[in-house]
Length: 285
Length: 267
Image (cartoon, rainbow over the protein chains, first blue to last red):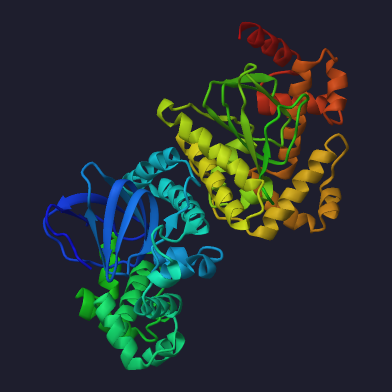
């Protein structure tokens, strides 16, 4: 893929709130590398104008509309045309997985597909009204308005997922590479099963690949190992539970899939340089 | 438990056990408890439609849209704690925002399509949006969660809705608690507890408020003597009606009728 680096402005979403639903603001920055978000989420993005995203293997062009994709895929946005507005809200994965019919609805987005909208299912003026309201409410709103906003965002995501269509210039069966299908399948399987004991062999069996092949492709596509991805999901789930519940650390280590408090402590120490209890206190204050 | 939609405007007072969410497109007039609530173009109204009411378009060009949320669904929602004042008979009116008017109308029209369609996913999306819209209107008008804010279980919400539907149908008859409980097929104790949780008041007070609303409606819209209205509204004696007026409206039926006529002549 030929990437035109010249005359492109990089925009990175880097302002996030912690816990719950996050919002992001488009900001023009210097050169930035592809990134993944530390909190796993689905990104619901409205584009007014034309914007391009570079994913691991493909470039996606979005003209005026709303898209949804899984933030675990390495991605960077490249705004192609001046005057383009991009508004995004992040839906924490744990929250999306709790929706009714989540497995069917989220199947393809978790498999790594960029979900686009059928033309004119929802009048553009409704989105133009709601997205700024959502980002505002998620940033500055109280608990009630955040709760109300999350209902509306869920409704919006459902409509998008029901009305999805293949990319205009591609046959969907051909456009998605074998690698992406396999790695996407692994991502989805892990995202739905990380709360229980899981082995790399099991993931490989799920996508029908050899273990070595999966590990190599996964690392090449996502930039991290399968096991790091599992740990990342468990960590963000544990962080969420520590912030939102009063459950004991032992219970959280079970619910987040760590299996034992020792592994939870180890992951916190290694990746966050803190302990679960300290993290909880820091969130609370 | 689907939310229903209505384009048409009612000719006679309606009762529907649930919440009404109205977009006053072009303006609307709501006859409510003997008073007249006038909504300007684009205003959003929310009220408990279990009380008798009559909604009409402000003029020939106006076309208000009503979305109804069945009581059981409203009670299952996480915003249940904010509903208390609606059960006490308040009409919440969120004034129209000129910048949002077109988007608001498009939203209501979309819910109409989705709620009358077959796609369960889209029905669900519309339900989420309607719930959010009701809660936003309540929040905009300063409704804060009061009392018991915990989400109600589906079965408890259903039995409360069934009890409310039974009460609405038999409000003119004597309604001992045991009779309602038998009709809904749960124990009196459970029913009293869950209706109190749902309405934020004892079941007997809810029934009294329902009869009061009926009486207020009749006092303003008819010339019937107070004694006749007392029976038509389901009060077993005039003493009970006077007592209810005194406690919950702070006036007497006769004075209420005179004051309402005076207010209407001015509007």
